[in-house]
Figure: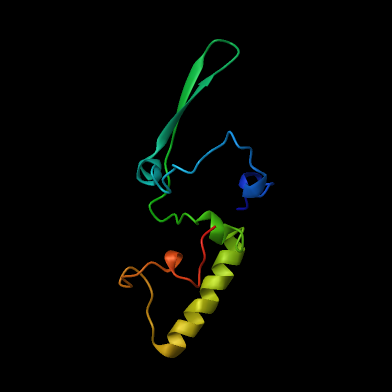
Amino acid sequence: MSNNSSKPTKKIADMRAEYDFSGGIRGKHAASYRQGHSVTIHKKDGTTVIEHFTVDDDAVVIDPDVREYFPDAESVNAALRSLIAIASKTGTKMGKSSQKSKRQSPAYPSK
């Protein structure tokens, strides 16, 4: 499933000065988002519908800097299958047992 509507159309340098996110904290709401959220829809006929959305337990959320290179499930899966092939040749296992996060290493610069 591809969702290109969330892809930014302008670079950060083009952002207006009044939109200052310098004090923002990355991932601040990630845990609560995974627990779910409700959306209240007020219809024209006066009725109200409340819908609750949750993220599947097996869902993987891709960081924006990674999403630039892998915009859809097909490209992510192809890249991971290539990595699995390399890891199986070297006998390396990846996952939670790896103590360091690769996101902050120099090989993966954050924007």
